Image (cartoon, rainbow, N blue to C red; front, side):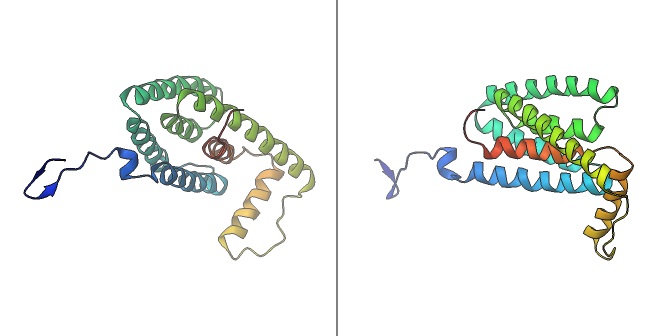
Length: 188
């Protein structure tokens, strides 16, 4: 290799060589944000917009790393998903936070993984619904434990919601669907 000033020239590094743990860090970041979104959805039935925005940024950066066309296809898929989910929102089937969260997650996924994510989320949502139906028949709406800690207070409120068949915290199903896609290597 030629050198200038006695320093040998080196071949340029590829992004993966500079940051070999990029996909792992991306997955950890997304999973941490999803855990926060699921917790907030259970506790307050809201998903903070900041979480969706952070997921859009993380997903866009991950897809841009794979090339502009990869990002463009993912963005188009996310827009299509947003349009379809907006119909569900307009009919009261999903909350606005759920629509934003699912759309934000689709930005960071290839189209096939977006499909897998939607299917896995639907399955997780079905299981969540079954659990809530079963619990609504067994709980009397009263939580017997102490109400001193935050988790106990949220549990008491959730028992009350389940007993009255209130809305599901669908952020939990969304988090489970995305976790499945991120942690599942292979086809389904």
